[in-house]
Length: 453
Image (cartoon, rainbow, N blue to C red; front, side, top):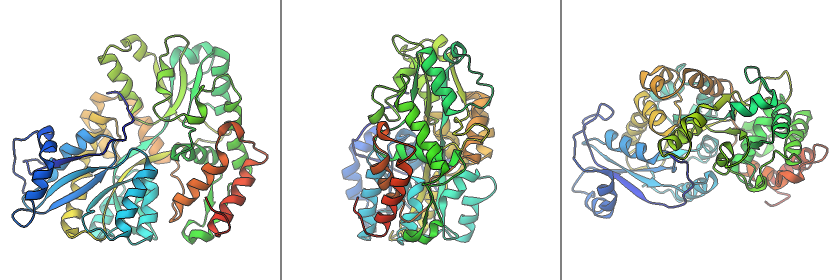
């Protein structure tokens, strides 16, 4: 499976097959490709003459498996139809926000980047989960990092579907050549120095987009700080980034930006752009922070003959680097939560469908087939996952989500993120002595309405 970036939009229609995932379901022997071609006709025929159609707006990750889940969770009472959102989280938010601000009653289910749950809930755009469903969405079996993302103002507004986190991927031979003991926690400074010494690269996400804020937030939290506090105060939240933790985060970015180990495209780097540096035509490879999809991505390259099994066996993984030596790192926490639109004409059906597509079985399927890891602790013990992933990698994923650091939960998160990007980008301009202070002042002015993004 190659990781690609695709801005295309489309839809896949799911019609009621039999499955253990869907109640009252009955099978129809039609493939997804044929259904996609027939989408306009099916949509047109689903009016008063048949069961209602639930529109599920999904991000482009794992669409093949999401399509199967939509099929399996469709029932005799309703069909589930996928609507594909843009690739970028910011563009996904804009499209959904426009629909919900207009009280669109055809937005039934939504795949939400966790940072948008608070904003949408605060705006009255998400259906609050009934108590029984809320308890299930946040019960002890749900990893802490994932459970924290679905609540706002002490209420629950979404179901965690899959949990994402970042780990440090690396070539074992590169670490050995640099003399870096990867069995022990490593710092960003050590990783950058090791890559410099051995002629390797350090892969990050530093384009002017959401993933750059993910990196900044992880660095700040890893130094014991936070970007904001008093989050539920909204625009009156306390800005915390102008701190020793903010300066430590800026120092890491400054060190990498000035190092030979930086990717040539550092200022525009993203999740996909650093993948090729792991197995370059020449050179020892890289250390790279990136999401859980990486393992399946490189495994797929063995199957396609683009890398050898020996090269794949040289792939290593370790906990996200520490910002400050002696302080445990705070790996990023992401993933997807499934929310129900507040204006849906069929909220009870939508809630039932949301619970179905986030079941433990559904989460295992996403992990095995797409590299999108479970939000539930018990799913990591599935024999299917044990067959698909090394045991220590599964434990690393699970622990990183459970002990990692979500981005700030705020109704104004989109504003906070954009303000940080404006000041911290480009990474080559970051200065520990000025960037945290400047970003704090600018963010305060933006939240107070004294400055525009």
